[in-house]
Length: 419
Image (cartoon, rainbow, N blue to C red; front, side, top):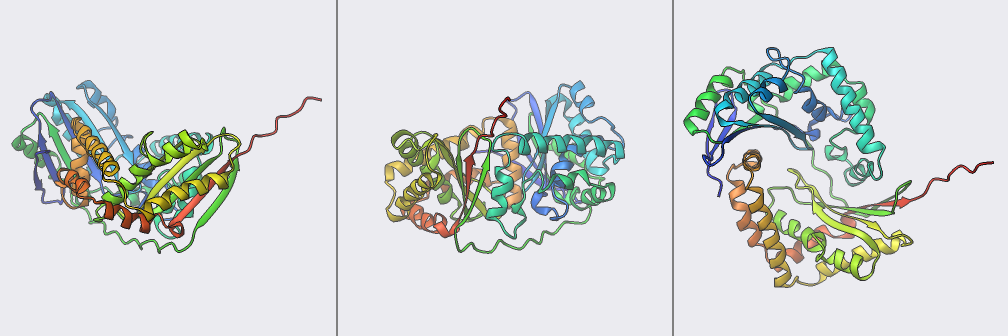
C-alpha cells in the first residue's frame, strides 16, 4: 500500500506527496498530459521532440543538467502515445534544486534556433538508428497504421515520417509548448525523505507563481470497430521471418482490462505460457514468441509477436497461433493456470513498488487516470478475474475479425559476385 496526500494549487497543478523517510533521496516526477495522440497528423513526433527540447534550458537556467549534477542528482524522461514524463532524483537535503529546475522550465522554456536545430538532429538520428536502420525496427511504423485507421495511435511516438521532425519550425514548437506545458495540464509527485508540509511549502514557492495557462481539452474520435482481418506482408533483410498480431482491446480503466491483460499472460508470458510451450518447445515453429498489452489510456492493443525458425512457412505459423487462441475462446481456462498468471501479475506489481521512483510514477499515472489510489487497487482487480471473464473477453478480443497481422518475411540480400 502506497501512502500519499494530495493538494491542488490555485493555478491547477495537481500535487501528490508520498513520504518515505527510510530513503536518503527525494524524487520529483512531473507528468504532462500530452503524448503523440495529441499531435496533428501533418506534424507528428512533436511530443517526443519536446521531451528533448525541455533539456535545452529555460530562460533563467541555460543548462538544466549542470546544477542538478552539482548537488548529486540525476534525471531523465520518456514519451508515450499518452503522456510525457520527466523525473529527477536528488539527495533529500538538496531537493529544492529540483523544484527550482522543474518550475523554471515549466514557466518559460528557452526557445532558440540553435537549441531546436541541435535537438532536431538528435531526434532525426534516433529515428534513423532505431526505426529505419536496424532489423525489425520499422515494425511499429507498419503495424500501427494497419491496426488503427482513424485514431492518432496509428503513428509511432517517434513520428509518422522523419520529414515532420526535419521540417519543424519555431512557430509550431512555441505553439505546442503553450498548448500543453502548463500547470493545469500537469501532475507533480514529490516522494521520498521529505515531509508533506515541506513539500507543500516548496511547491507553492516555486510552482505557485506560474500562470495556469489554458486547460487543454482533448477531442479525439474513437477508432471505428474493426470488422474483418487485416494482413500486410513485407520482406526485409532480417535474420528470421516474424509474425506480429495486434488485437483491439479495452482501455486502461475499463472493467475488462485486467482480464485481457491476463489473457496475454496465459498466451505468451514466459516459457510456461501456451504459445511458447506449444510453438517453441513442442512444434518448434518459432524461435521465440510472446504476448503483451499496450496499456493505453484509450482503446489499446493486445499484441502477439514471434520469430520463426528457419524454413517454417509464415501462413502455417500464423495458423498455429490462431488455433491456440481459438482454444482460449472455446474452453474455460483451468483455475490453476489462471491463478498462476494472477500471482505473476501481482508479484510484478509488488516489485514495481520497491523503487521510490516507480512509486512516484505510478501515483502520477493513477492520478491522470482519475484516482491516485489506482495503484493500490490493482491487485484486487487482478484477483477478481474469473475463468468466465477470460473466456468472454477472449471471444471478443481474439476474434480473427479484430486482428491485424504483419507477416515479416526474411529475405537475404543478394551479395555481389566478383567477376
